[in-house]
Image (tube, rainbow, N blue to C red):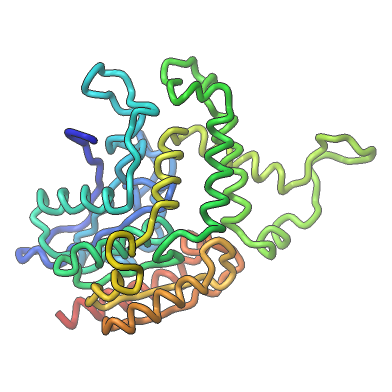
Length: 351
């Protein structure tokens, strides 16, 4: 139970007089509110969808008022495990409650109220963000004029849950995790090794076999004139890099919380099942798959397509052709951008 929360968000563009041009972008697991713009103080990387969000871009901030919110439980400004607990001022750590996709959406709804946005022109997200867009359309059907869910699912699959558990165990089995109480540790003394291992594991199934083979093959970092146990292939160096990069910018406890959010995701819970829940969606909907995604497989988006269509909602289905696997929605901007532009523009013109 959280008595009060802080919500970090960014906006681009101008809300029109009728507050009808607002677009909500929902980020993935280790994303944040910085969907667009350069890196800088407090922003270690450029916006995760910078190539498609901005003036004149696919999500055109000259036309739309775009909002992106750091998820509840995160570590980039919104209340999460690293935030001070009101009882003693110390970080919540492992005291932070379990969070669901619905909790994240409720915080976004409260922010929308504060911003004077009573109905989103579109709610858009990929992966964990796609879970949020689905929940928006199910929880608040009157507040969503259209919805886009990319490389996501109505409910986490056993495969996804299994991979997630391995990542969480990598963190909690790091002795430096210390039961979630590591915030007074010296720099470099927290559970960085566990978080880096979790990211290495994730990075493998975020990409595809073909993507890794094309980029690295069997090329090596070390000469391997003789066989030494820790001589490295290039792919190992790549995984090391991504592990270190995440550990520099992300909190291990937030990773645990948000990773569990994805495992708990099930739009049918308490609603009579997935079919009944998705029947609540009445707005124009775009479901998109990535053909090489081995984590959130196209089968799951095809099920979403069929069930939402059966409920009567206008629906479009798109396949993103990518060698890059699940990460394709963060890479294939030349496909994702025009797809979103056409869909949201069509909804905007039809309202």
